[in-house]
Image: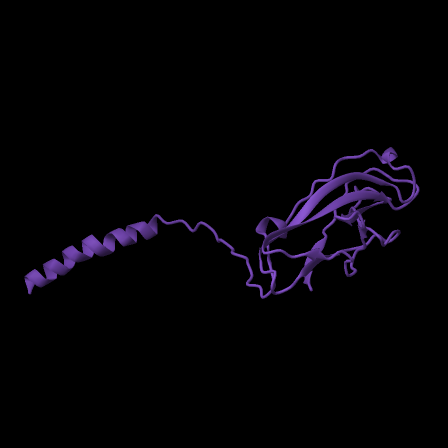
Length: 179
């Protein structure tokens, strides 16, 4: 009986005590969040295209020659991967967000007291056509097997005769429409 108690005590010291010590020295570190989706479409959107930050160039307020004038073209793209050309033949990108109150052909640029006034952000497709916010796109890009890249350009547009300097920013969402 004494041997059994002795063996249990020794085993407890060897097995349980180290795990208790590890827990006593353990500090909770945080959390890891995983995001993703399983899609039932022709293609998947490349991870880098999902959450893009496009840095538009700084321009001076006098760059704009008047209402409706454009400045500072900045190219960007949306990459589609693992495309199956047999499922759908075309993909279009619809851009949604807050349109400018003075010029609904472009997105509102700037929020808050330190934002620029009289300027919006327009998006052009690869054929050079203005993509109107919150509308079904005109351009249909042919889907080929594998990877497909759809190119766009963003530009500032004067939405009033007088542009006031300040910060510009916009959150513009996109959705892929397959045909």
